[in-house]
Image 1 (cartoon, helix red, strand yellow):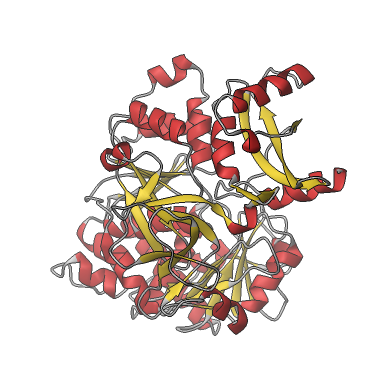
Image 2 (cartoon, helix red, strand yellow; image 1 turned 90 degrees about the vertical axis):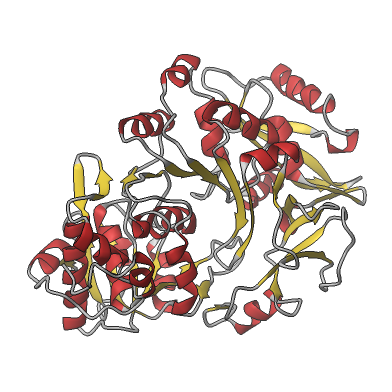
Length: 511
């Protein structure tokens, strides 16, 4: 255990990066991490974090150093995170699906002094140069020291806690990803927020921990607040329902495509699932079709909470009861914290679609090593934009329409793909779907629907016509897809966002 004094309150521990130590001292046998048959208590996690802090410091990676890791959803990921937050380190988790070259750029750009790789991450072996301290998780990697051997051989005595922080990289569709640099103190509000988690509540981590949302909701909001986390190694809708019931899950984070997959389960599977333990189910990362959200509230109850936020900063949130009065909203931001404007930042009136500008958090943020990118994001003093489009209604509720980069302009008319996507998903044959703009000699661009069919169905011209007719009944004529193409799977990021740039590239080349 650490040398922390149990009589102090947990907010003080969180401020000092010592929340894990608090529960190790006050509730040592309480589970902290549950992953399959493996259960790690708070006391065990505390000891492992101390050992890793010491092991890194003994090898020249001390407070202020940057650490990068490319680790799957395994216990070691959480140990590294806990050690970084306690040891004053700047931690950058990396998408383990990236190639060695893609990951190597991030490792170098974040100025890492140490790199933790994973045998199940194909890019790990070549992602970091041999001048770095390199540790391997899950097995042996040539040129790497074994993570577990290094940690187990190190003393687990108390360490001087210094608050560390994260530097996450955005998954932009153009150019290299950008590191979002924030001062360590900016994390304190998140650390002590709690997000409605009571001692002993359990959070289900459904997505990859390297992504901002599972990491924030699972580790910062839950594990730091005395809520043990149940970790899914990979997403499976039926398994998620089983874990909710088996572990009496109270909190979870989903993305809209997960909702869609849950709703597509056989009726008997859904009917037999006990989800009564749920208190709060958060979702974000991508627009959620109104009919999907309605169906999830009807099934899970009024526990669904939507948020609009990004790695760079937050925007708004909305609970089920409020959302039902204004279907489609992502919440009512604090007055003055969100505005709608032109490309130049000039304000637009209520109800008019424009770029969404979000008030920067205290101390703002910067893209690591990219002043030009930072400046282009802050087009309005004190506010940044990520290129999302939307509007505020007369009562100040925010509605998203799409990203400016996804906009289809056909015959001079703006068409927002997310609106058409929502209609596509209501067709009973559609398992997943998206629309993109493709070149059109007459109109400049026309709408193409790309559809992934439900299991057991085969593509046909008749089915394509049926899907177009379905859209025609529900959309203005200029929004109806000119044609439908079928694919085996709609490409999505691990955050659940549609990779429209991949679809555009594929089908523009065909045209």
